[in-house]
Image 1 (tube, one colour):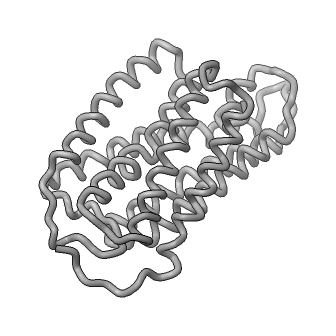
Image 2 (image 1 turned 180 degrees about the vertical axis):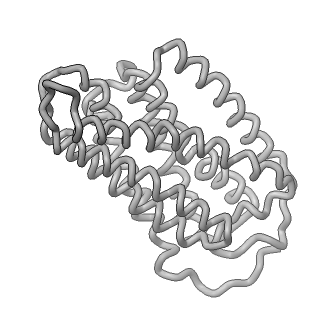
Image 3 (image 1 turned 30 degrees about the vertical axis):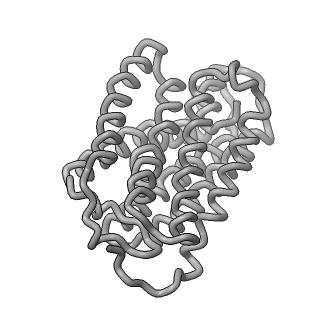
Amino acid sequence: MIAAADSPALVHYLPIGTTALSVAFLVVLLRRHRLTALPPHLLWWALGILAYGAGTALESAITLFGNSAELTRWWYIAGALLGGYPLGTGSVYLLCSRRTANRLTAISATVVLGLAIAVLCSPIDANQLEAHRPTGSVLVWSWVRLGTPFVNLYAAAFLIGGAAMSAFRFWFPRDGEPRDGARALGTALIAAGGLLPGIGGGMAKAGIVEGLYVGEFLGLVLIWAGHATCSRRRAPDTGAAASDAVALAR
């Protein structure tokens, strides 16, 4: 049984715009490489943008066509579990050795897969369903929701932390290296963009899913702006070149 609700407000249509942005950004990322030739970090980032868009597409479907138990299940998987994890994993492959990245990904992916299966298997509390607003509170197995923040913190530590670290290094370079203000700004924008959906997710857990919609849209805008800023000016290869890719600029 779906709880009665008023018609969707204007903010509930915002995920439609976020989905369109995700598709356009994914095209931009893939234009420079054939899919089979993508290095691991770019492959994971492309998967991250795909999952990001899938989550907002499900939000759009709920707004336009109404909610259901199955839409909410898949929204939780695409948004809560996979909204930031692939992007964070891309940064893992960028910042760590291949062996370390493979090990971290094997462990974290097992956890994510287990939680996704639990979401699909959990009974649904139909009384918690709202007509035009998804919420994880419909999952009867509430322990599943307790595991999600650990996945998101793991992703944020590498995506946001890596971008913030790169911004600092570009603004305060080591001796003998020139300051790169463009890359510093670009990576700072990516760090801010990665933070906003997390803030929105916290608001969604408190029942304010509209905060998530705004955070997702603005976060993607900032991430794309950071990518564009870093791509606009490519400095010669230096020891900081690897950090440049944290900004999705490769």
